[in-house]
Image (cartoon, rainbow, N blue to C red; front, side, top):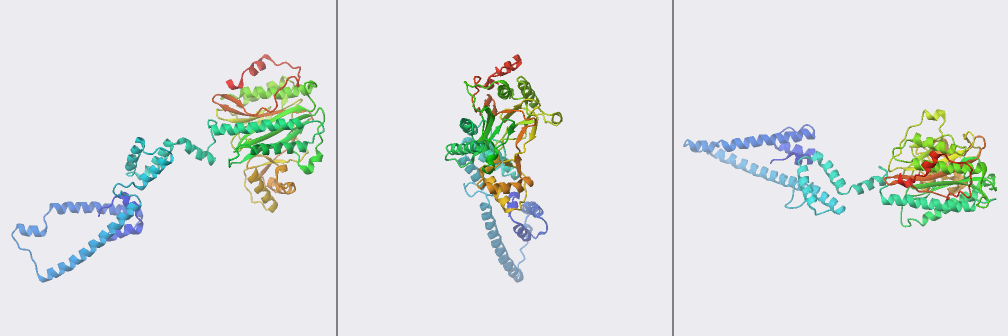
Amino acid sequence: MQFDEKALKKLKVPELRQILTERNLKTEGKKDELVARILQSNVGENEQQEQQSKSPSTEEQRKSVGEEPVVNGDNVESMGKEGEEIDKKSQELMEEERKLALRAERFGLVKKNNELTEEEKKLRLRQERFGSANTTKNNSELQEVNKKRENPNKASEFFLMVVVDQDEEKMRKRLERFEVVEPLLTDPSVLEKYRAAARTANTVIKMVFEKAVENASIFELCKYGDEMINDLSKKEYTKAKFSKGIAYPTSVCVNNIACHFSPIESESELAKPLSKGDVVKVQLGTHYDGFAAVVANTIVVGSSESEPVTGEKADLISAAHYTAEGILRMMKPGKKSTEISAVASQMAQEFGCKPLEGSLCHDQKRNVIDGTKHIVLNPSSEEKSKIALNEVEVGEVYLIDVVVSKGDAKPKLSGTRATIFKKSGATYQLKMKIARSFYSEISTKFGTFPFGLRNCEEERKAKLGVIECVKSRIVEAFDVIEEKDGNLVAQVCYTVMITENGVVRLTEGLEWNPKVIVSDKVLSSEMKELLNVSPKSL
């Protein structure tokens, strides 16, 4: 019996050795050697059969010279026994061939009448799954399968090519689901999730500012903001199974406090109630399926059109507003991070202010609001030599965070304990049960987004559990930052998308009202020209 190489490779080693034994060949060696030996024996059999067909048998030679065949009793008896043995051996070989044929059919090595092989069945299933079966293209692909059967090493490449060609978008969706690749902004579902997050964030920050009046509790404002994010998030994507909610907990920073102040209930009395004339900054963020939008604005408590903000406070808030607007117009594909930083410093200087030294704008990704690409505003001399030069690209999302102040605008750590944290991505075997329970809770509820201890089930346990997590560096603290010299600080923060059609600012927060914030500073012609450009036309 003749065997082809592909059929032999499908057999197990004991089966190959059985074939070699039947052919009186050596059975030692690895599988590839056994296969080669059988194939070599095929060649020998073919040559022998050809030679036999060409040369006459012994009986024919006798007849050709007129001799009678030699037959005696011993010969007859031995021939009878040999015939029985040959019949028995042939039956065994036929049975073995039948078994091999059945095994070959089971593994799809041969066709059974017009039945599809396993490879063809798999391809047909893929075609039906992607909605493209019974096409001319598919028929040619089935023919290609037969060709690939001759070269099994390239079969996997072929099937991958077929799947990608048939529906590349579905393949990408799978990769996005497992976070192998970043989802594209050209995907309508991604855009809508970003927009939904922005709608929620814009709505909630206005609601918080409405309650930011004289004698308002900072703790209650933060708590209210987080509750509104969760309540409004429940009303969006009601049938969806993905996570949604807080992407950055509500923080309320007053006067010289720059960021990350979000008190917990047990320490709420340490934060003084708001007073008329306080410069108040509110920041918060929300997300749907990991696509986040963050927003921050600054107001002066008690201000209105009838009681406008003037003087240094007006200059400060105007500097934050126009610096943010200038950066927005610089977010063009190809723009360098250093160019954007230079414009930010120049715009703030128009109002006698500076961006807080070393403050960062980040790229955003799914489940991440502080990516690895940075735009460093007002870098120190030491930072300038270490800053990586980044370039804005189409398809990116950025969190622009502008914090400005008078004077030197140098930051320092506040004496207030941090209450906002996030997972670092590092791993560590926690020793304390309360720490393990805390880490499990934040992993389930907040994922990789920042969270406040106030948002945990039990504040007391959270305060204890976070200690070991921070020490082991699997959780990072968002330290409360203030201006070093006690100067007032203003903030504007928003999320922006860089698309092929231009720049899209997602979060706006409060509408800018020059009748409430009245500054006597006049912008230079260069800055006016920059601000006259529409962001969507970039």
